[in-house]
Amino acid sequence: MTMDPLEEQLKHALRREQPRAGFAGRVRARVAVREETARRAGWSSLPQLRWVVAILLCVGVVAGVLYGHGKVEHARGEAAKQQVYVALRLAGTKMQLAESKVRNF
Amino acid sequence: MKPIYWVAPVVLAVTLAAHGQQIQIPASWDQLAAKAEEVDNVMLDKNMLGLAAKFMKDDNDQDSVEVNRLLGKLNGIYVRHLEFKNPGEFTQADVEPVRAQLQGPEWTRIVDVKDKNTKENVVIYTRTVNGKSAGLVILAEEPTELTFVHLDGSIDPQDLDRLSGNFGIPKDVHAPKANPDKQKPTGEKP
Image (cartoon, rainbow over all chains, first blue to last red; front, side, top):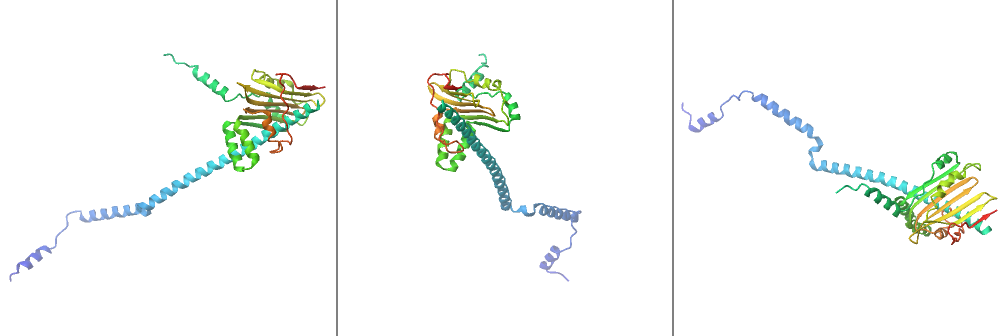
């Protein structure tokens, strides 16, 4: 019994073929690499979210530094103001003492 | 060309002279401070005065405006005030090094009051540079107090009058009138 040419072609195309040596090993290695990459990327695989977090961190650090600097500056300014008052009070008191002595002569 | 090593010190000296003259307080005052009951030590240079002025501006009242106007004229404020429990803790040897620095041609003793009864001695000096006022020093000796106040800048005693009654400055402070005879004491009370 002879097969028609189409059937012949199909049989040829669908014939069982042995993979090349080491095929299973190569598949397992590629799967392992993909799983590792996915595990490492995690949430940061979203590039926009990564940038947002980085910017927020930077803003937080800058704000913290500015706040700390402002507090130190405020304390220095208040201390300087109080020192000015002490100096003026002493200057005024001693000048008044001199004036009272001059007046009594 | 030879490097001119002396330029830097000369420039520094000229700059210091242009920005005022700080009176050196003798080290013995530090030892006295250890014995004192109350010590006030104020050292404010131009930068610190600027910072103080900034914070006074925030107070936003007329008195602060007046103080700010005064601070604008100053290059520095230097104060040493020692208050002792008992009289006789300091001697003339502690005060003389300060007086010696106020003998230069720029300094004029406008008031010198000695009260032998109360043992109080107040001297007010003004500094004049090129005909312009450049500072004011008050040196007061009392039985239990020793006070040095140096207001470095274009200030005259009348500037303090305007602040009397505020910030702990006694009311009705009037600057004693300057004595035209330089280095001549205003008076000595027997």
